[in-house]
Image: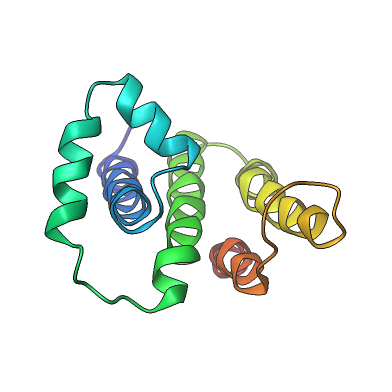
Length: 134
């Protein structure tokens, strides 16, 4: 793995941490990620962090859509680094998987076939990193 690939994976990790931090600290603690954090034994730490940022007023798109964009970008960066020796069409096909799953899940929420709240900004959040990558 070259320096560029290692840098991409490092950036991806940072994006995952930022997106996860926003999700865990700013969203209601009823989400699956909160349950996972509790199972990992860091629920108390998350609760303390939530208290520290309690007064912060981030725009709704940052709280609800930005984590998806960051996670989508992180996945694309990791796949691009891991498949750096593969043909570009193969890297793109694999990199498109998670963003497309996110887009499809939002569309299924829109038509009522998947539980959750449809948000058009979430579609943009998943699609934009893929469009930039393309």
